[in-house]
Image (cartoon, rainbow, N blue to C red):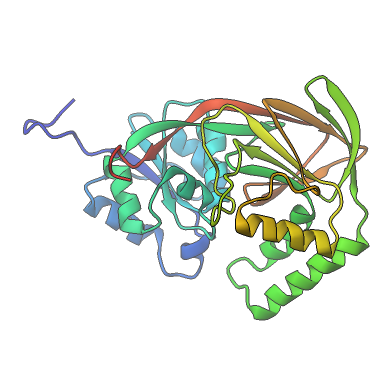
Amino acid sequence: MTKQNGEAPARRIVLVANVAAGSLVDGGLTPETLRARLEAAGLAVVPEPRPEASLPDRLAAAAELPGIDAVAVAGGDGTLACAAQALTGQAVPLGILPLGTMNLLARDLGIPLDLDAAIAVLAHGSLRPIDAGEVNGHVFLINSVLGLPARLARHREAKRGRMGLADLLRMAAGLLRHLGRYPRERAVLTLGDETRRIRFRTLAVVCGDYREGLGQVLSRAGVDGGHLTLYLVETLSAARLVRLGLGFAVGEWRRLPDLERHEARALTLDARRRALRVMNDGEVVLIAPPLRYRIRPVALRVLVPAEGAR
């Protein structure tokens, strides 16, 4: 359907803003100012059906609204993964307003970090299907991490939005303390036809794979390759940590002797624990093992810059 003057009708979107994320947590932006800027860009903003509910319930309710063209989500990567939980496998696409700390998914998709430019993508962008990872029903779009980073994430969560120099120094001290104080995680890994026992400091399952190259830290090579990549670090002394950090900095790290890498469409991780601490796209959850990972190829539709506008 088009307007009488031949222009396409304004996209009807529902805005779900995570007020605990990035640029929203310090009061610099509010859902009301975001809505006003979206409407000023020509978008038709439909009211949220359950604004008083928890964030997952708000997103689930928004995804079920009839007649909308997208669910526009304002927040960081963890908020977008929460939205993907409701939107993966559905026809309604995800619109991204990158207001988090890292905004890794937005960077991978070429979505501008400037708010007005990101709003323009919501108004005029095109649809692109991307892969989603899943572990025991929990959807992630970038990575799922166990071990040391998931432990340290507890300190980050406690200080979200108010990290000072003293907090950063305490986190650095905590990292060094964890290197020698805590035993390695024990698990049984099933990858293809092979099952083996492993011990690790850090294990990461990535949607797709990271790109090597100078300045490409945590940048992925693609978002629709149809596979997961497993990274496993069995031991992590201070010296090995420095070596890995330098490898990432110069963009040559896949072949480091301290790092094990495998591509797969699915894998299983079991452990003699009631629950494992798993960090999906920066958000920590407790999941009972065995952890069953799988890739869901091109299962999520996202609004991205139109071809030639990137």
